[in-house]
Image (tube, rainbow, N blue to C red; front, side, top):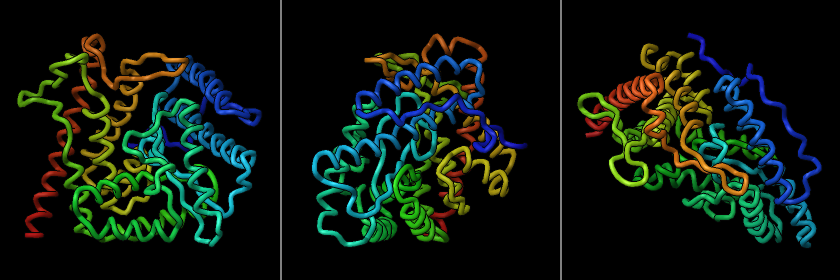
Length: 362
């Protein structure tokens, strides 16, 4: 099977010129225009092509937000950046899987060159940049994975020390931070700083079987989506009773599994699609397992775009749930259930791997 939707052969919705945007408010207004064009194009566009266009939009908006922030800093008397830096993203942005309503997950990698104003400048830069992004419609991350936070704004050497510390502690929280970091991707600034960070990250993971097992322990935890009879488990109570949680029921389990397999097999990609493509190419696991999983992930991306959403001040917000009305459509229900069966099969395979790893450790 040749995986569909390789990023190298996708046709994007026409890109927008942001060069004349001079304020966060104007950036937000432009985003609304871009979003509407994407919605209009969605029905007649391949889901992977459309996903690529959505993420190109977000990359362009975030990149321009960085430019606006540098301009703001100069106008406020802080001058130009005292040293080079890289603005990077994590989460769905790092994986190039943002929806139209994604929030912030970002950080900064700063040069190690000494400068007396460096700490003051970038503390203010991080605060202003997250505010600009919020003004442009990117809600701040509830988990505080943002460049306004010292944990996610470090010099290259500080990042190297932090990655070593996380790798040396196999408890839940440090491993969670490593998992977040694994979706790292450069957006703006000095790309060499990002490349060096990435090399340091993967060098520390390669061949580290104990750390792989710790990551796997986090990976096999996911929301129950099929009961013992193989029936789809929907929400039982609350506002979404009878609806299905696409994000945590189908999408995130596939993201987590692909991430672990990529780490295990030295696949240095942040995109789930690219991870799965490389795993299939390398035959890193059974092709009868990986190829259907790839197709299920494409389905998960498409279903995420179909979840219940509302518009607020021109921008979309989503509950992340597929409604009962959608589930009543036979084709929709069938593709969801088929995808969930594949998720269960994949996770049972990972659970077997974990039991084997823990027996060896004992």
